[in-house]
Structure formats: C-alpha cells, structure tokens
Length: 620
Ligand SMILES: *[C@@H]1O[C@H](CO)[C@@H](O)[C@H](O)[C@H]1NC(C)=O
Ligand SMILES: *[C@@H]1O[C@H](CO)[C@@H](O)[C@H](O)[C@H]1NC(C)=O
Ligand SMILES: *[C@@H]1O[C@H](CO)[C@@H](O)[C@H](O)[C@H]1NC(C)=O
Ligand SMILES: *[C@@H]1O[C@H](CO)[C@@H](O)[C@H](O)[C@H]1NC(C)=O
Image 1: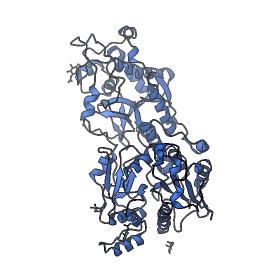
Image 2: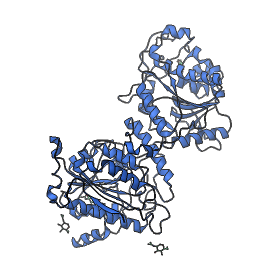
Image 3: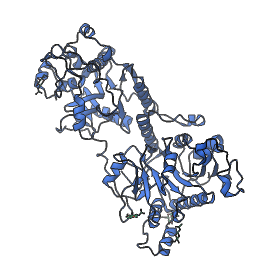
Image 4: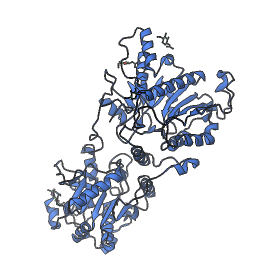
C-alpha cells in the first residue's frame, strides 16, 4: 500500500469552514465561485490521461477552488507514473489533492480482461465512490464532480457552466464517435437502457438546455448544498435501507451497479438528474467490452481526436511533460502510390486543419495547389483551350458554370495529368472540406483491397452525394463496395492510372461541365442524353465505398458555409443557348435541402440494447 494524503498549502487541522476561503483571491469575480471536488478513479488509462489532464488544466476556473480526490488501482500500465508526473507539475496549483496510487494489485479475482466487470470490481468501485462522497462532505465542497479519465472536457467553460446551473445533479452532455453518450433518456422497469426519440434530439442538439433524464453517468456533478443529496448513494444496501426506512415500494431489485443504484437513489429521494447540452462540453470514449483490447481504445482515441480537429480545429497542446507519451499513428499512404489534397492557396485555414487531421489519422498526403477560379479570366481560359459544352446549363437552376467550378475542374484535371506524366498507378484525391468517418484508415485500405481483388476498377468514391434513389448493386464478392450510380461531389476518390487515361481521352477541357457531372457521365450513369452524346466513350468503371468513408464538413447551403466553387463570379458562357449571363449556381443547395441524412452516419448503427449488463450500460 502506498497511500498518502496531501493537502497542499494547507493544514488539515484548520477548521473545515475556513479551508476554501483561506487562499487569497486575485479576481473579484472568482471570490464567489463555488468549490468543486473532482472525484477521479483511474484504471489502465495511461493512454487517455495526458489528454484528459491537458483539458482539465485548461478549464477557465480558478484552480484553488478545485480539489481532487484521486484513486488509481489495479492498473498494469503507466497510469500511476502519468498521475505522479502531473501531481509533481501541477498538483500545487489546486486547492488540494487527496490521492492514493496503488501499484500492487494488477487485476481482480476471476477477471480474464481488464474490461470485465466481476462483482469484486463493482464492490471496490462502489466503496471508493462512497468514500469520495464522504470526503466531499468532510471538506465542505460545494460540488462533487465524479469524472472518468476517458472524458475530455474540451470546453474551457465546462466547470463554470455546470456550477452556474445550480442543479442538484447534472451531467455535461458528451459526444462520442457514434451515438454513445453519458446519459439515458429512458429506463426499463428492469433498469435497462431504453431507446427513445428524445435521446437523439438531445444528442444532436436539436433542442438545447438541461433536461431531466433517468440516468447520467461518467461525468456527473452533484450539488452538495442541495437538501437531500446526503441520502444519495452508489451502494445497493444503503439504497434498500433507505427505501425500507421510508416505506417506499417497490424496493430496488436491480444489479449492484454503481450508476444504476445512484440514479435510483436520486429518484427515490425526489432528486432529478439532468443532462445539459447548452454548450459543446466535450467528448467521451465508449467503454470497452470484455472481448476488446487496448488497441480498440487507442483506435477510438484516434477517432475522437480527429473528431475534435474537425469540430474544434485542434486538440489541446499537450503539457510539456506529457509530450513524449502522446503517440500519433505512423503515417501511411493507405497502400496507394500518392495521396493529394487539393486546396486553394487563399484558404490556408482549411489546409492547416486538413494537415492536422492527417497527423491524427496517420495519413501521408501531399499538398496540391488548386486552380483558383478567382484568378481565371476568359482570356486565360481561351489560352488553355477551354471550351464549354454547347448548351450546358446547371440542370436545376438553368445556370452556367461559375469560375469556381471551372477552377475546381482544372484542379482535378491537373492531378489526372500528373498521374499520367508520373506513371502513378493508384492515387487518392481529397478536397479540403471533409471529415473522416471513424476507422477511416482501416476501412480505406479494406475498400481499396476489395476493389483490387474483384477485378479492374477505375474510380472508387470515398465520399459523394447520391442523387437517385435507384438501388446500387453490390460488387460481387465485396461487402464494402457498390457500383456507383449518379452522384455529385468529388470530396475524395481513388483513381487508377487507367481511369485517369480514360478521363483525359474524353478531352473534357474542350466541352467543360462541372467535374462532378463529368464523372457520372464517364461511367454512364448520367441521366442527360444530350450531354452523353458529347462524350461517346463512357466506360469508366466507378465503384463506391459503402458505407461512405468521407463526408463534407458542411453541406453547401448551411449557414456560415462558404463554398469556393459556388460563390465566385460566374462566367458568361457565350455558347449557352440563351446566350445570357446567369447568376451563381447553387445547384447543390437544392439537393442539400431535399436530401435525407447521409447513409451510414446514424441509421446504420444498430443498437444492441440490454444485451448484457456491462459497464457500457448503453450500447448504441
Ligand atoms: C472465482 O471463480 C470460482 C470458480 O468459478 C468461484 O468458485 C469463486 O467463488 C470465484 N471467486 C470470486 C471472488 O468471485
Ligand atoms: C435522508 O433519508 C432519511 C430517511 O428517509 C430522512 O429521514 C432524511 O431526512 C433524509 N435526509 C435528507 C437530507 O433529505
Ligand atoms: C422518478 O422516476 C419516475 C419514473 O421514471 C419519474 O416519473 C419521476 O419524475 C422521477 N422523479 C424525479 C424526481 O426525477
Ligand atoms: C440536358 O441538358 C440540356 C442542355 O443543358 C438541356 O437543354 C436538356 O433539357 C437536358 N435534358 C434533360 C432530360 O434534363
């Protein structure tokens, strides 16, 4: 046993009443801020702790109003080392840290994996959480915040926002790589998770606020000044005792599970639990199942970090002393010859974000400077031999091509030319406004390998917008590939050298149309017969990943979204039928409004409800 208790800068002997007021306040504002005890239980979290702690350090909350109650046991990784480093560097800044780091026991009896929950483990956890509660009362903390190390409170305002709510029990709503979160909206009579429509409304922030729910867990703040919280418990025996003494029926008959008992004890005491989604508080890793390995968690961490880059622009700078602990995946070209990312020079923020994503995901991509539509003139186009498809007009608004669309075509075209010049056999072409689906790297390689093994292919869409509700046949002997139908967008696609040769042989510059109309024409799924005549050889073999691996960060037409291809000045296409200039094209916007949610994002997630009572509780 290596149990120590430390109160930094304080004497335990001083009256408890004085404890929190004894540090001199610097800002008037902060004087009144309530005190928080963060109760943190750690087991085998060496891989999440550096980021977890980096985010905690960033909280916009005076550290001397925060104390920790920290326990780490049964860990066979470096969790204790990581926590010790943190204590050495930052411990003193907090009001106090009560900790016990126990390196001796490595596993529980009868446990075959650290992701299993034998009764002995629940028992230990429950007794520790009870102890934390008692400790919070002893030191007169205003709030106790039960927090797990796989929660990343990315909002600096998280603690302030939660304490301001003054709710007896509240959890900050956390996002995951799927639909998993730290609350339930429904509970069955057997205390299982119950699916409700409201869950998704809250999870997707269709409504904002603090909502009463039957269950919150993993990051739960309790107002210790609220009458009645004294009777909250994680212990089934205490709950039953209380229910009996109050003559409450029916008595609790559920499992000895800390979070369920806690939720029922709150309900029995008439205390509501709330989930708050007023702000984007942060992210959560889904608990592992007994069959999982550490690699599953590390992969989840990759997914979550790239989600953070997509949503927030970056993950936090690592604390110096943790820098060497944070391992990023090694970079790979996904078994392809090259990966190009097309970006306009005047959009460096997008390039930077994409490069961060490549870092997080381990993708070796090269910058490819886009042709800027804003710099094109009609003279320049004439020099390049660009002509327009006679009679081309955008099929939905009957408008001609914008300079942005022309620039976009020329950018993709330049890569096709590069492929031929440099004899590149397979290339992934990415635009710069995309988000990667979880497990992108693994799934991308899988999709490409399938395409190779089923025979010849020219193009594989990784992301696109399907335009027709026609069924798209699965590629024989492949479970992740379909034959692509009429589609828009060129967010990301793999092109083979033969594919590039076919596209160039069609001489598209002489009869230009938007690149995402050109591709479906070339694989002969375009509905417009007139345009087809302009491209007699339409034998491109185009497949698509199913489900898709990429989505746009914003749909065109979303507020705040600036599309580079659609906002630029529109060219007067002399050859057009009407011979008149038209306003900018917003053809995609029409679809964006009509389109259902992209497949594979939400509804392909099959719930496995109530299958087993493991720590994940809610399995989405
Ligand atoms: C461990 O498993 C054995 C065999 O199933 C069982 O007899 C024993 O009671 C278990 N021990 C604990 C502490 O659960
Ligand atoms: C806790 O529960 C007991 C038993 O019902 C009750 O007498 C007591 O008032 C409760 N305490 C609080 C603070 O609500
Ligand atoms: C307790 O649970 C019942 C049944 O779910 C619910 O109707 C009631 O509002 C809950 N009470 C509190 C205080 O949350
Ligand atoms: C095909 O495109 C031409 C030229 O833009 C247009 O006039 C025609 O109506 C389109 N045909 C169909 C069936 O959409």
